[in-house]
Image (cartoon, rainbow, N blue to C red):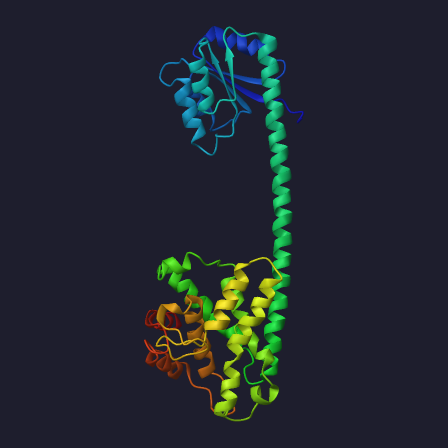
Length: 348
């Protein structure tokens, strides 16, 4: 245990008790004899004790009232308190312990008993502090390890997403940009408390990063279609449309071989639903309105907005203003009307 002498506040309105108590304790502890609880609280400005020996029956503020005040203030609630009292009934002892006291010592004091109880409780407090230090150190190491694993996970996912993107050489940077647009929209609807029931089930650590996998199904689409230097035929477009179902299948395979995880759940919903339309004319399922997962409805806007402003073999990039106007025109048909209003607001 620490070698420095511990500070004991001895609080009692009886001067004889203060004198006797100080004589018992002074050789082992730095003792502050204090005649009232009010003066004790005033002393906290300059001195914080390692333990308080607190009389119960005192004028102005009794021991019960004093410990209640101690235990509601984070500056003092960890200070161990031993009650000193002439009361010997079980009810008084139980009340003191229920208020947070660690022990109950009867007056007049037995010097050996008082010293031993103080010694035992101070040692227990020392062990608690050491355990807390070890626990804090362990938590810090665990947080560091989790951060390393998270960084590795994000690096792997980013590599997979970039692999898909590199095969489709006209969409470079699409993954990063759509993530940024999605993040802006997520922050906005959380702040505005829009769709609170759905967002309450989200894991914010994984939602936006999971959007990296929204086009993972394109890994199964042939290069001749992905990199065709012109508009796709209707047959080719039907093949491209399968990337949503393929993406869901890929993510489900991962889920089958791993524990259920919010990252994969968000990724699956986004991959499978970001080409659905509010009016039910989208793909792959043709679902409508709020049947489409909220994550996917948000990603649909971010995905189309970025595509409109990107170069394609069959079109020039549009300006931000032109892209916003097309998003606005899709309100209530292609896109969730509430989300369109919020997206246009944050993009302004």
